Length: 629
Image 1 (tube, rainbow, N blue to C red):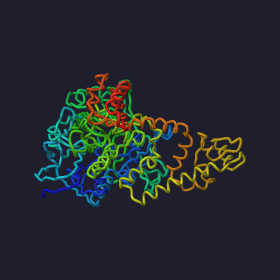
Image 2: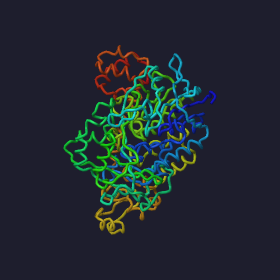
Image 3: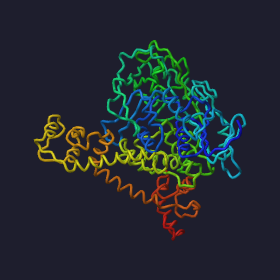
Image 4: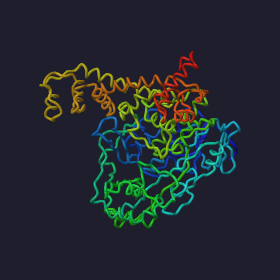
């Protein structure tokens, strides 16, 4: 291969890399996606699913901004489920069990069909940069140099990675694939701080070797739910695949306790930090010693595969102990293993070295996304990849980066947490991390982010017109609901009383009826013309905005106060050593993070309200004529 010039180079073809490369190419830039393998694009080396609490909303946000993950997840779903539907709308989340083989094939097709995008199956052995720490390309394993205006690293768990099973340790990527060591060396030469993290995956067993007749069936939903705004085809419940729930036994616990010193986690083999919210099974036994049994979900991986994925049974035990553990599960007495569980260690960056655009602060033209930033999960990776791809292009075009606020998107929460708080373990998005989760719902991703996607150029004119119609339909429905009235003798009132949803003792408007917590909006559909034909998300949005009107209004008022702080810019040449009366920790954190505005400064761990007040006093005295301060 001859040396070649591109606008954007993306290193790594996982979930982050695919979104970054597709975004850059669709925004008109000549892009190359460099991956170790041509046929392993957006692979699922661990859990074969997309979505879940917080993560499902991220997938909806990716779609609203013009990304691909939602469409791929809908097209290759084996089962669809709405989680937490019995709880408040702020934690509702869509999840699909994915056909991991078809998902990867879908993304591979999209990459190969995309205009402006080349797929290069080679290893990157080092970054190319000058004395001013400006990255201008990469060198491949065969010595070929690829030059570009921006480079995005999305290396996942392939950065100087090692597989761990018991006391066994060897250099390898996931599933004994290749790994790369040169990029880590380049990052260190650039003066960047690296961390060492760990993750793991459970065993897969042959489906015909286990008896699930006594397991609890976990079906999906028949509701027409999808991640993507553009999805119109839904798989009926009868055609969806089943998942199953079993529980470990006291024998399982005893096997772990008797062999704990053989685990990589507890033998001293592991040198890194693993994910707290997705721990190895032996870690569960140690941390929750009073529990005799634990939930285990049995999930299909693909229609073209014959393996069950053993969700919740990740381990770094040696193979002989893993076999005992698996055979102790109910129905697994005669199981046969297709692939054994393992833990994997890998390098990642301290994300506090990043700007909100996901470009390194001290290294120009270098962006990072996904697990290299210390996160876990396909969804978190894809979201970062999309933002990195967008912002790399916007930098090339001398445009300001797209920076989402915490009240606008879970993606905003994710990036803000990474750059201001850092990570000490693999970061996972949770609904509890979002203080404005009533605003960041599963149903309203389009309302929050679609306009950004259109302005950026990732949402087409046709998609934008369809979205505007979507909004108009909801507005029309709300207006009709305000006007239409139902008496206690109306057919709707009789139906609601018979079903125990409401007892209308006097005349109510349609909107007043929806405000009653026990009423299902679908009961009004036959009587309100403008509700007929609306999507599930539209009906949910109308219900939530109506029923929680006071809470939503109060939340938005609080957000407006925070936005004012975001508008107070901090000059990047500020000398924090000259700011009087700052606490020592606050001064150190401000110097390290170098926040762009007061709002960001106020969210840095260790920076207290008193420190913010001292900073404001200083800015007003040193920059009295700057209206942005």
